[in-house]
Every structure is written in structure tokens, then in C-alpha cells.
Length: 326
Image 1 (spheres, rainbow, N blue to C red):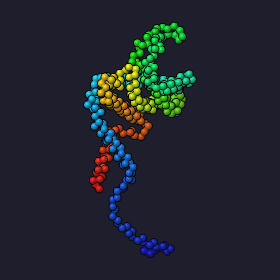
Image 2 (cartoon, rainbow, N blue to C red; image 1 turned 45 degrees about the vertical axis):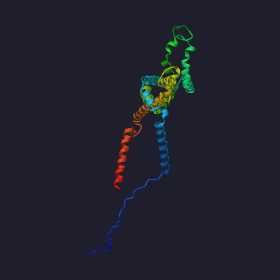
Image 3 (cartoon, rainbow, N blue to C red; image 1 turned 90 degrees about the vertical axis):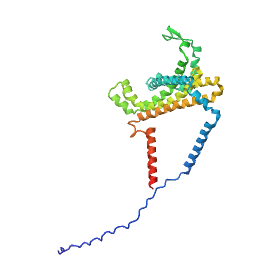
Image 4 (cartoon, rainbow, N blue to C red; image 1 turned 180 degrees about the vertical axis):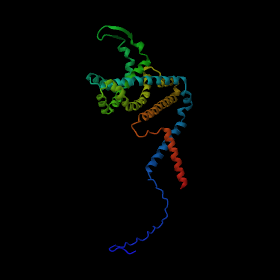
């Protein structure tokens, strides 16, 4: 066929030449070397090994006596008293903290001033001073009465009969705990977005209903984990109730140490291990509480220790498989 006039003949493109084939060699990416990290790890491992070796081989610790005292009924009775004091103080301290936080956020200047003064005073005075003051409270006020202010009393009662050692310990710890819980609760309430308050007010909801059903449930996301962390300090603070003649875990160990002076160190180790167990249990509770209240705030929940262990073992198996393949 003849080409039309004016048409330009297109030159055929030369066939594509395949690129030369190069042999691909597998290259492994080497991680950045960090000698400082390895040196620090070695130092920590050596120090830990020396510490464990000293605990095991030093006869001064008397581990046989530690085993004898660890589950003795006397020690377990003191442990139950510690748990009872902690439970009552935690509940009463949280309730008192809620009331103080509401008073601090109130529009009444008198309530705000009274709440601020209470928190300031109780956080400034050492707990042992509060306990000793309550222990000697009957010397200041022998009788307490209920009646009209600055007027006649309806009935009176002897303060020394009601102020038992357990009551003094619980009241003292609760008063001290309420001051710290008030700041935790107040911070949690203030963490709620202001738009939630405005939306509730726009719906015409009463103030009490707004707080119970809208503000406080959202504030619990911040309050609960922080207050559970506060419980760890409360568990350790119960050791001070020994000074008001209440034989808790620490008080029982002190009493047994005066009777058996040769077992003071094993008894102190018993107390240490039991406090480690209690604080560890509270820490586990704190982890799961924080994980529960993290729902809706994070895209994925933090893994539990068991999940971390499974992930670590799976990564080790995969790494070993890759090493074997190379």
C-alpha cells in the first residue's frame, strides 16, 4: 500500500535490550553498636549478682529464722490488722476527699477557705504527729457532748471509751488520706472538658444530676488510677500505727524483736517481704484499673504482662528461625 502524500514514515523503535542480569546477594542490616549500653548492662548484672550472693551467703540474715517467723500466727494477725486499717482508711479517706474537693470547687468562699485550710494543714503536719495528737486527745477533751452550739448538751459520752487503738489509727490515717485524696479528686473533676459542663447546662439538667451522671463518671478515668497509686503509700503508712499501741504487722515484729533480740533482722525481713507482697498486689490492681479506664482514650489497650511474655517468646522464636535460615 502506498503512503498518503505528506505522511511521514515513522521509524520502528529498536527492540528493547534486556538489562544485564546481576546476581542479587542477600545483605543483612547490621544494628548500630552501642558499647555504653552493654557496659551499663554488665555493671548492673554484676551488682545484682553480688547483692543476691550476699543475701544468700551472709549468715547474719538467718534465713532459717525468717522461714520460721514468716507464717507464724502472730505475724498473720498483725497482717490482718494492717489490711483492716488500710481498707477502712482508703474508703473513708476517699469519701472525705470527695467532700473536700466539692467544697474546694464550691462558690461559697467559706467552704473554699475551709477546704483549702484543711488540705494545707494536713499535708503539712507529719502523720505521726496526727496519730500522737489523737492518741492524747482524751487529755484535752475528757468528754464529748452533742447539743445546741454554745447551749445545753443533749447527751455526753466519755471519749476514752470510744477512742480505741483501732479507731485512733483509722481516724488518723483517714484524716491524712482525705487531704491527699481531695487534690486527686479535684484534679480529676477539673480534667473533664468544659464543653461537657456547658452541654449538661444547656439541657437544663440539675447540678447534682450533672455531677453524678456526667462529670464524675468521666472524672473517674483520672481519679481512680491516681488514687490506687495513693494506696501504695497508705499501705506503708500503716506501719506508724505501732506508735498508738496498735500491733499491726510492723508493731508485731517490733514486739517479737524485743522478746527475741536475736531475731530482729529476720523479723525485719519478714516485714519487708510482706510489704513487698502487699504493694505488688496493689500495683497489679493499679495496672488493670488504668487499663480498664484507658478504653476509649487510646486506640489499643496496653498489653498485659502475660501478653508481653507471649510476644517476647514469639519474637525470640522468629529471631532464632531467621538466624538458622541464614
